[in-house]
Length: 415
Picture (cartoon, rainbow, N blue to C red):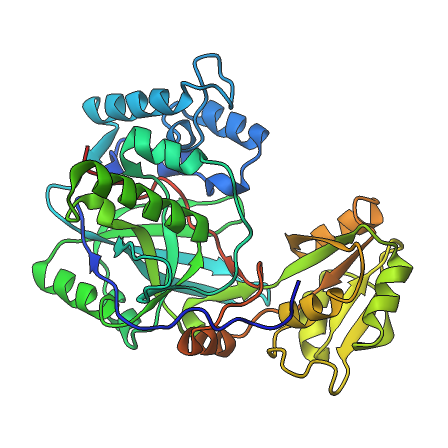
């Protein structure tokens, strides 16, 4: 591991962003019953529950099962593709008659107890080569070896769940405030209200497309999905000899990179492979240590107010970790970078990632981790600076919330 960010991405160029004929659930379907969380946060039991909730729930397509109901069957992707075509034929899914954008609003109460409403736009974002600019990652990613998303895309010829992008275009939000044609809403398990509205007026489509296409877009969530879209695009180019197919773009929610449009939480660390005492010995050269008492939900605010990280121990108590002066020369002003730099000097340490203070405390007190470390959220200013300077944050530096629902907009691809 290293605590030094790498200057690898140059923010040059701008991406295309285009409307498309969205595939949506029929108004006869209840979005409360057919929409679902992102595939990568669902357990097997979650999928079972959603399939039982409604036979048309999007997980039938997005987290497919084989003919025996098994999650690893070889035919599950083809069955998903067949099911999708049946739903289209039966009118369960209906395509817009012309290219559209979709306004996506979320109403929720954030961790500080403040009522919020955000708005972004769903469209087709250009798939660019790695390092080409225009569409930029904002953090180093952990590898995912599975080909699940690629196999599903190849079978269904569809983007089923969106990438989340942050636009550097000033004024994008102002173009999205006016309501579009209502297309339904759903309230998720956390009480977040997700509202979608269709935009089809040519002048407004052109204005939104021009705004997003006028500045780089930073990928906030969905780096793996975007990489899979690049692989799929390359396959389509090789097979067809063309570079003008639907695979040149991918389904993306884009919001403006401003504080009022984002709710950013920290992703904390769970530590294994060493003892709690070894962890604290390793951190002591880099941080001033101070007892923090019993750790509770309020620590999401406490660490911000104190300007410190917080180690969590097996008895549920914590230790504040205040960065020592001069200990992080050359390391960015970011908790994930500071901790990564310090842990690089600790042998045999194993790090995993988890959001939510309660989840960290539960993991440590139950013995599934030897210790935890609570981080502070990354500021909007730091996210913006990262993009402007073409830098990459350490993996799992930011947790953007609320999570987008899958099933509200589907983008079909050339067959």
